[in-house]
Length: 147
Image (tube, rainbow, N blue to C red):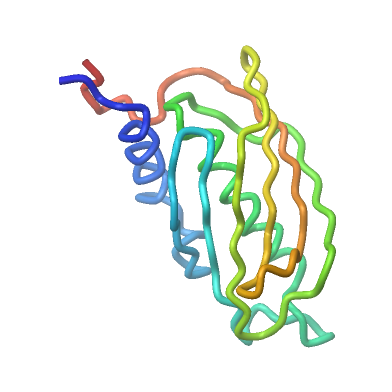
């Protein structure tokens, strides 16, 4: 049986989700998966608000970082973030549904480049994140029979 690139991506994300406590604790949901592209969302609850009544930047960063991690591991290569940055564009407020769309920009050798756009339910851009990844070896889902 030959497994498709889409099936590989789905298996890899499910493998990561199985042991990711942070994703579960924050109530993040994986909405779409494809090789190099992942969409993750979360609801801004009262527990995520800072002293100004807006979503704490650390939680927005975590949402983007999770989407980045899923996207760069979606090809069954064990990969970590090497460097990332975020620019906050607009505040997120209580009850906003934030969506992070991660897209692979480049994958050359062991290095990758990914952009993640975080927007709210109205399409307002909340933040832009750029992540640099590094493949460190091994397969994420080595238990799967790929042949």
